[in-house]
Image: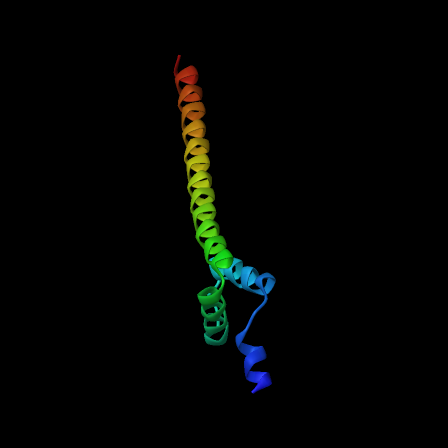
Length: 87
């Protein structure tokens, strides 16, 4: 029974590591159950997960916007170069 309890309960440090891992890869079934059990008892880790998801989304959006801006700059430079060559 003690071994089962140990497998089920995570520290907040391990739970937050799983939350971050979950943003990158799929968790194993065991990890999913452990994290769900921990979050059921820990509002701090539940809030941490919500914030992590939001931060991850904002960062991905920022990267996409930066890539679009970079591509737009390349297009402008290329177009200006072609205009200069044609004159």
